[in-house]
Amino acid sequence: MILPIYGYGQPVLKKMALELSPDYPELDSLIANMWETMYNAHGVGLAGPQVGLALRIFVVDTEQIKDEDKPDLGIKKVFINPEILDEDGKLWAFEEGCLSIPDIRGEVERLSDIRIRYQDEQFNWFEEYYSGLNARVIQHEYDHIQGVLFTEKLKPLKKRLIKKKLEMIRTGQIVSDYKMRFASRVG
Ligand code: NI
Image (spheres, rainbow, N blue to C red):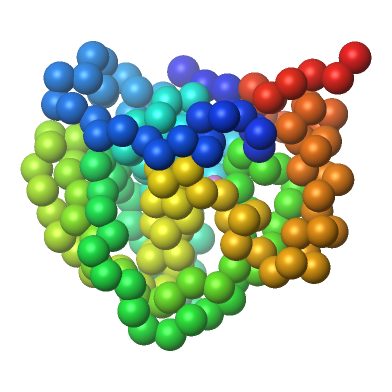
């Protein structure tokens, strides 16, 4: 089932998400719905808060953007109760976007390498290293469960330039090609 994606300005996107417990009801269908919602919107990642749930879960599929130049890409995973333990490497800028913030893109600087601990759908623990675009997508989704949006990490000038557009999203005065739920409606 395709779920509505919560848009910029929705309070749930600014909350610190809570741990997901193994007895969460119908976790399998939540995960299936998150995949379906992400693919329907042509995303490479989707976090719980984006479907209105302040829960520490996100899905990532970078297999979709894999090509010969990026052989290290290609993870398709559910991350439950993740914790980024370390970030290092070099700072690099990349133009990010977000399904909750349609039609806005901007360069965000992040460190290239991460070490992350997380649980899978069966609540088994894993500790893994990621770099490059895999790390980038994970860092973006991880920010979501910490209540942080990529637009907060843009340079001051860019922030000023998108201010009006963000307000249009907050008030639902945009057209997106997937179902969204906006913070408020004008008129
Ligand atoms: Ni996002």
